[in-house]
Image (cartoon, rainbow, N blue to C red; front, side, top):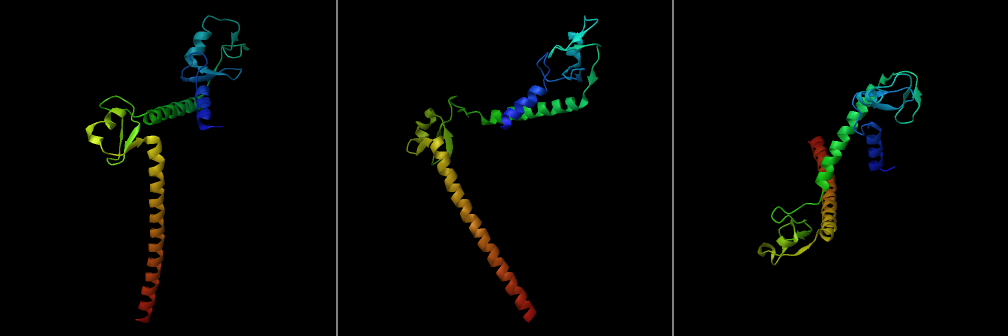
Length: 176
């Protein structure tokens, strides 16, 4: 199951079926369904003999519910996850040019900057190589991977040389 699906299921379970908001002071009734204490109290306000569950319509013989602190804690966690998800979503939203309010879809090779269509046709980028971000990103990603691989090889080689020099140093120290 995908993370997004699991997250939406968790948030649905942390919601009250009456007010459809996150559970506040959650309580469980006899049939096992959970509600905000205030929502179920209002739902059963004018009833005397039987108290139907708003979800499954099971008739509870008494106006009785049990606090569910563990569900309250899980609901608080679900709220935090949603807040983090919202921040992440905002960060992933398409960037917009501050000057022109257009979506930034192009990349200037010389300035290493993302541009809108209007900025790319300005005099500032007149003779620069400007290309779509969708093509520029994989190209630069490959280049970075090559640079990283070269650095990793250099680090390994340096480690070997350092080990050899340390051994030689120890051998010379023993001879002395």
